[in-house]
Length: 304
Image (cartoon, rainbow, N blue to C red):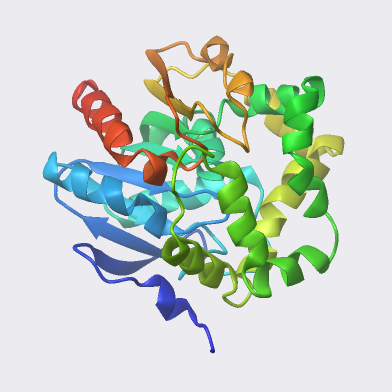
């Protein structure tokens, strides 16, 4: 079967649109009317990971906008631009193209990493930040070196540094993606279903997606020994003044719950942190009702 980007345009109560931003074209799924809430997916997924939240946010009076990150789904897949500064510029540019001057940015996994960076790198467009399954970047970086358990959980990062091999693994038979989904999800749950795992495996097998996905993590690891990584770390020490919500799964197999603490130290404004019992890494899908309740309550309480 030949796969193309149209498979990412899954039908539903949302609308699909394409916007020009930061020199590329991005796909965004939209649902509802009201203040914009921009949703950023993680690895190894695409915008569809937010399908349960989009309905809940629309019902609560928000305009839910789930974008495919650069290199994923139906967005453009250029050969460069997978560092966090470019990602933050992508997000800010997409928001402006959507007609939003400021918005709450909600991210999961790698999308959470980008969300944490928004108040520091793109403060003018960032009203508030929610991060699911990802602590502040400096907390995660420190734990990756200081915690043997987190270092073991990060073994996939080392594998993604190899040339060509990860791309082949992520695009042949879907086994690699499906294994990560199951290993990082809670062993107590039944997620993902075979159908859901197949959707994500096929989305990763789209032309150039596997390479783009690997490039984000190649930057993450390799930049730590380069000036751009040092500058990013120094910049991220700046206190975050906008409201922050952090949710983490009790059984997260990718970013361990013991790693998730410590982000409050970087938050000068309102900060909430909650652990979701029994859930793994993929909170938006493993515990959609709990996530929806937290998100809507938090968004409703944001200052105007």
